[in-house]
Image (cartoon, rainbow, N blue to C red; front, side, top):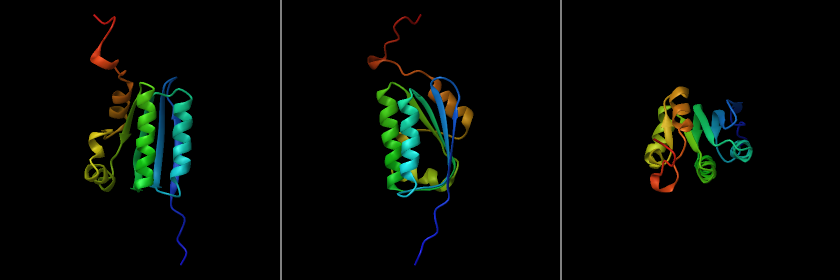
Length: 133
């Protein structure tokens, strides 16, 4: 029994020198995750530290897809950046809630909210705001 190829589309948008948006539609799973991972890692490798992943067109994510998201978050965090996800599909949002990853990721309902989340600069450890009034 042959299975149909999963629907998967990915587009990218460089919004400024540090802000990058990747929109993913369809299914993120074992057969589509490698391309998603590569594109995300390439953006982070180019110094993009404000990353928005628009998953509003995503219908399914498996454990491999979640691993890509977590690895991307780890890399962005190590670079003192931020990542936000746009999640509008109730089934996908429920996955984040069931796995308790909704407390790990910044999840936004739309692009403006997600951009606002990532464009806030991370503060140094200890909450120091050196030079701030």
